Amino acid sequence: MGDERPVYTLDEALSALRFGKYQALVLAYAGLGWFSEAMEIMILSFVGPAVKSKWKLTSSEESLLTTVVFAGMLLGAYSWGIISDNYGRRGTWMVAFSAFWTAGTIFEASLAWVVMTRLNWRWLLAFSSVPSFALLLFYGLAPESPRYLCAKARTVDAHRILEKMAFVNRTKLPPGILVSDKAIKENEESSLLRDTHMISMTRKITDKLKSGFSSFFTLFSRKLIRTTVLLWVLFFANAFSYYGAVLLTSKLSSGDSKCGSKVLHADKSKDNSLYVDVFITSFAELPGLILSAIIVDKIGRKLSMVLMFVLACIFLLPLVLHQSAVVTTVLLFGVRMCATGTITVATIYAPEIYPTSARTTGAGVASAVGRVGGMVCPLVAVGLVTSCHLRLAVILFEVVFVLAIASSLLFPFETKGRELKDAVDAIES
Picture 1: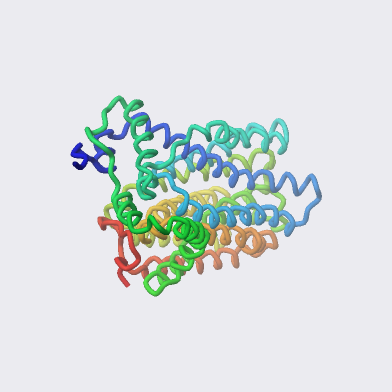
Picture 2: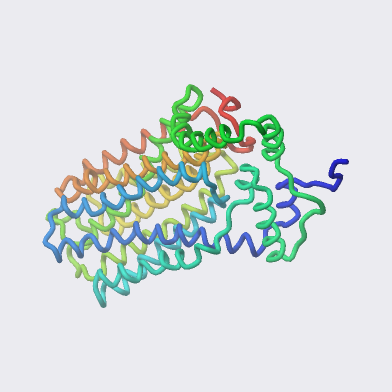
């Protein structure tokens, strides 16, 4: 006789467990990683000028310091995207994650203001590394995604995590056994392969080695290549504009430019001006985050990005002409607000537009291309400002914004209110 005990699915289990303390702890851990990465990016604004003065670096060598950081992030974004598709990934609350990023940028600006005016850049590096060490300490406690485990037919492991979740949230799992469609399918297949066990094992190992490459090449299939190219343009423009706003604020506030009136605080002591300006513009991420959260589900992902890129163009355009220090800071505040908003929406849109089989790989590779934008920005745009070509730098940013607007409009479909697809064949051409 068969097993007649009741069964339940993962979605039914998650509904019964509800969002509680367990999910909040997972969000806090994942958010700490986002917080730490934001600090890593923001520290470039403060360490760059200090190291340039200490080591007598040229402007090109200073820009290379920033470029090297983004080169490492490019490699990590691509490789971990593929690893996540094959070995598991954590569900995300994207807007909440963006809030952690914003908190990290503001915290780093505050930390630099305190440390750099009293100690030196080495101390800033030491203090800024603390969140990363905290991540390592709690790494062993970070749980795997039950959805990923069920997708891999590891229902026993998934059930163990769900039990912990129920204990922490003080709720109960539904009665019966956790089932997975993947497990049922694999059980049926295994009955046909009993006599070819060794062949099956060899094939699984080979498939595992090929899966990383196949998920990458899937991005260039007939139904996905348009999405992939447009997403790359979007992420490149997002990174270019965001880090451009951060680094431009740093360059115009540091007081080491030879362009006279182009410096925000040429007539003041530069001891605090850099930290004040970066601190103020860091707060631009809060309204950017709020704006994106409000409009993303009202007007959709595509139109949200178009609207905020258009606003960024409007904020940046007056910098073609000389502006006062206050006006320049306000305009850069607006650019950074919009750049934060577009990044938030893009990180929501990218996983939604790909099928499950290539979701993290697609988003990871797009993120890697965004790092290329971060690498190019200090070498080109900030280099133009250093050589007293602020107008050309502004025009370059405007061109990048126009490309981003075009790519947002050309995406094949809007994902607001749409069900996520699992297979490439289910994606619209």
